[in-house]
Image 1 (cartoon, rainbow, N blue to C red):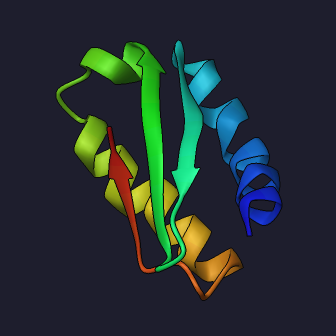
Image 2: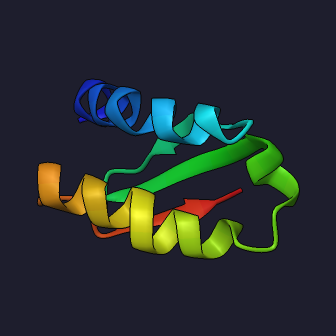
Length: 73
C-alpha cells in the first residue's frame, strides 16, 4: 500500500509546492493510518490541518479506500 500512497501523494505534491510547501510520507501502518510530515510553508502554516484533512486525507481516501486516516507527525 505504501507505493500506492506515494503515487497518490505525487499527484497532490505540485499543489503544495506551488505555495512553497511539500509533504513527505513517513509511514503507512497495517491498520490504514498514513503518517506524513508537512514541510516548507506547510509545516508552519496555520491552515495546515485543513490542508491535511480536507485536501490530502480526502484525496488519499478516495484513491485508496483502505486508508482510515492521515495524520501529521
